[in-house]
Amino acid sequence: MISLCIVFYPAVLSILGNAAVLITAAKRKRLLKAPELLNVNLAVTDIGMALSMYPFSISSAFNHAWIGGDPTCLYYGLMGMIFSVASIMTLAVMGLVRYLVAGATPKSGNKFQRSTIGMYIALIWLYALMWAVCPLLGWGGYGPEPYGMACSVDWASYQNSLNDSTFIMALTVLCTILPCLVIVLSYSGIAWKLHKAYQTIQNSNHLPNYGNVERKVILMAVLISSGFLVAWTPYVAISLWTMFHTAGKDSVTPLVSLLPCLFAKGSTAYNPLIYYVFRKSFRRELRNLCVLCCCCPCCRVCCCLQTDLTSDKDEGDGGYDTASNLRWRNSSRDNRSAAPLVSHSAAPPGLLNQEQMSSC
Image 1 (cartoon, helix red, strand yellow):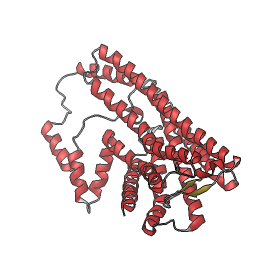
Image 2 (tube, rainbow, N blue to C red; image 1 turned 90 degrees about the vertical axis):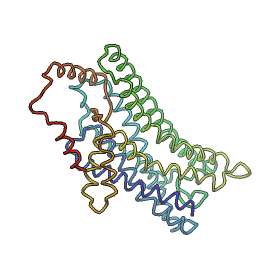
Image 3 (tube, rainbow, N blue to C red; image 1 turned 180 degrees about the vertical axis):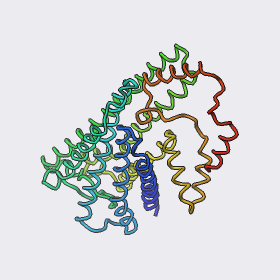
């Protein structure tokens, strides 16, 4: 029953959270910048994994054994391979794009066109599909996990044949180690660029809230990049251990192998939470979506409470500040400071508060 709860609740959170991400993205699709399409693709991989794999895990948890035999095991392993490889490759491409965007000027900040990002996304899915069908063509294979609630790459067959060992090693290097290095290096470069840019701005005394903005942007980058790595590292470690310890006293027990797998699958649920905390546009669209759901008054109360949590505006290019964007905004602030203090077109504070209250 404990394993059932551990599988069921992340599945519900993942489906609802990523569905909300996709709905809000569809509502503001004309406003989406090109790099933000990668966030949408990441939500597709997460909800796809939840919809295609969790039903079998939940049913097997009820049955206390894998249901469906080899056909469902093959399907489960195929879906797991497609969505997991697509997810980590999306994060790697996202890191590279963010790194390149971080040094762009305001006029060239949108240098990645939608067609370019769309091509990257298509290549990501082709790459994932290529690795997923390799076991079907005879290179490598899929097999049940020791605890009987999932199927994946047959890690235990590493020592059985050269065919299996070469597939597992190639998969580990090209679909795990290399993308992880790209993610870590990309976001480390972003943090360094932002640090140097904010140092320049701080020295010129143009940005009083430098510390808060820097911490927020870097924290979001670190959470997005490290969340996936933290969630999947235990599973990769157990899989590598299984490769070299298939029998005897060093073999992994079913319970020990179960927990990393559940932890890894739970990674599909945390991305919407990160978007909700750090992205004002996502909170605004989600609030509007909840207001439309009159049958759920709890959502309306929650959304009203979250309305004024932050006054930070969404930064350009998917939530990441660039050095040039900050300098451009600072110069804009200086220009606005020279304008008259009273604007006849500005709404009175009282009226603004009434509008905010009426929206809730």
